[in-house]
Every structure is written in C-alpha cells, then in structure tokens.
Length: 380
Length: 93
Ligand SMILES: [Zn+2]
Image 1 (cartoon, rainbow over the protein chains, first blue to last red):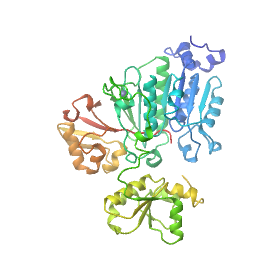
Image 2: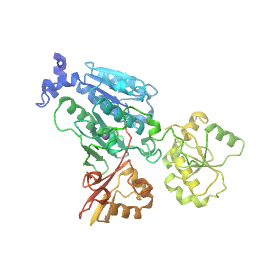
Image 3: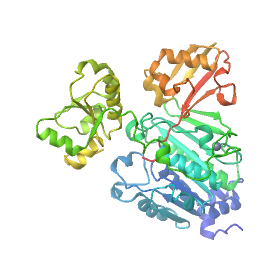
Image 4: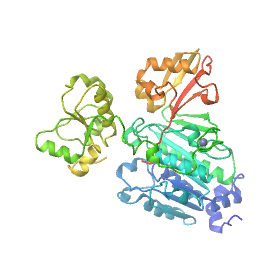
C-alpha cells in the first residue's frame, strides 16, 4: 500500500502530479521510496536538493567530511557559514527547511566494508556520488550482493559518465571495469580539477534515473553508458552489457562478500619498486634550519604557486619536468613537492627511473607543510 | 580505412592534448598500434606488459564495446569511430 498524500503534499507536488505519466500514484511511489546518497559533495549536492524537493520519502545521506571553502565552487548545498561544519549536518538542516514532509537520515561516517551492507540494506536504491575507486567498488559490490539498483555518476575535468548498474539484467561496475587503475595513474579531481557545473549535469541525470526507477516510467540508462563532454557539448551513449564471466554478477561469481577495497585498489599496499625517499614536513624543516636541505622543487601549476609556496623552492610544473631532467646532476639531492604528494611522487619515480639516486618526496605536500610548519600559508 | 579515435581528457596529456586522432587502420588492434607508435607514452596507459588492454580501459567501436565484437581483431570500416573510455572516479571532492 502506497502512503496517501496530504492536501499540502498534493499542492506542493502538483506540477509532478499533473504529468500524466506520474499522477498521484507516481508521487505516492516517491513518498514510499527510500534512497541512499553516498557522498554529499559535487554530485551529492544537487542529488540531495532535487530528490528532497521531488518528495522522496526517505533520503539517506552518508559522508564523513566537513565543508571546506574550495567545495563552494560546485557543492551548492553549502554556504560560507557552513565552512568547517559536518557536510551531513549542513545538508540535513538545509533539506529539512526545503521539504519538511520527508525523512532525512544522516550518516556521519565513511561507507566501509564493515558497515556498507547494514547501511544499504533498508534502502530501495543507491546513488553513487563518491570520489574514489575504493568506495565505488564497495558501493557496486554491496549493491550486487543486496540486489539494489546502483545509479552511477562520475566526473573528471569537463567530462562525465552516468548509467544505472545492477538493474533489470544490466551490467554492474565490475562488468565494465573489472579492476581499478593503480593509484596515481589517473589524477583525482583535487589534482585534475573539475568544472563546477559538471556535477550538476551528471547528478541531474542520476536523480532523473532514480525517479524513473522508483515510478517505473520511461526507459532507464541500464545497458547504456552516457558520456557527457562539456567542452564539445556532446552527449554520447555507449552500449554496455552484463559480462557473464563477471566475478561479481556473472554466472559463477567468485566474489561472495565485501573485501578490503583500499587494498584492492592498491592504496594500502606499499608499492614494491619505490626507490625514492619520503620525508615529513617536520624533517624538511629541520634540514632547512640546519642548512642541509636538498634542492627543493615545486612541481605544481603556476596558479597554485601563486596561492602559496615553500620559501627558497624552485618551480618546474610537472608537465614540463621531463624537459629539465638533464639540468640536474644525478648525484644532486633533490626534493619534490606538490599539493598533496601525489604528483611529486610521480616526478620522483621519473627521476629515479632515469638514474637519479638521491630523490625525495615531501609527504603530504605543501598542505601538510602549511598545516604543520608554516600556518601563515593559504590552503586550497 | 580512415578512422578516428577519440581521446578522453584524462589521457590527453599523452597525446599533446589532442582530443581526436585520425589514422589509417583495418582492425582495432592495428589502430591502437598506430596510435601507440605516434604517442609512445600512451601505450603503458592502455596496455599491460603482454599487450593486453588494461582492466580499467574500454574501447568502443561505433559505440559498441569491442569485448562484444571480436576484441582487437574487430574490423573497422571507412569512417569508423573508436572511443577510449577509462574508469574515472571523481564526484564528491
Ligand atoms: Zn558484473
């Protein structure tokens, strides 16, 4: 039995109810539905706003982060007053003001192998708005194990992908990508950048798919991977099918429970052939103070250097670094840094691959330095 | 056959920022070989040591996953479009 709508709900949702495909029945289905949004960031912001406005009866939101000023370029759930506060708390209070007729269920935690099945179990549908491979595989696997549709969206720079996984005999994420890229190969949004409006487009598509699945109208994206390219303003769809040999959803699955996703994505493992050193900010400070510091090279983009830099460092953006290899003496002590330590690790690897013996990476990048050593620096 | 290969933005740093590459090839395998010859840094991104397509990269020929066709042996037509679609994870941060 679908829950009935009160007169104020009938009025609030009248523009939906007028749609012949939707009607009172469709709106009742939305009220009866429960949706879990994983991640309250770029994709999660418009997802929360539109699905709350649409009258989804129970909206679960899971995120462990706090609001940071760099989020405000695209995470439209939040404003300046929210900086430093829990995203899930800010989202909950904003959505309760937007629509008091629905239940918001906040989860102040990161989705993990330990809690995923319990958290997802009561929901009809999951929307993936995460930002990293371990959580994407975790969401996918939990959805397949619990047989829940997984509305997928992902963004990078000017491009987005969206589809529906594990729904009406369609593929799962592992059918498409059996394994993730090794860490460092694909830059994250924090390192690669993202057009602020991009998540709104992809999230709107995800929210549309969720509403279609719940109300049973239209044709969903299952079996089609939608690719959006903002620069060319092109939408393309690619055909994807369930892989009968898929290790998770195939005919003879080998995965029957959740695993360690950090390890699966190579993150917890120490890379075997790391041949360069790593030091923490405090160690570098000691070296500088005792005049024994190596040559310090900033490999970030010029605009990042304008925000902040370590005094006395040289600047060679990562893209140009291979042209400058010859300028350094192979016996020279070199220390590289970037924002968080990921790009500079790749540069360290490049130098050691080319026979440089005394190469060091600054752990945690300049953000660690700004946190621990020079707190006057602007963080970004 | 004259065909085009569309390069996604995460991989354009290996193609001197080119988004689309035109070349001549009869099969998907030949097209990728020609592409890798032109941009050697791209090879390790797309293929493993055995020359097999990596697990986090898919190639679509005229919008169909080559795994549903004849894989690397899939034949191309004049004007065929190949699309490289790697896994991307962004969304929250
Ligand atoms: Zn599968």
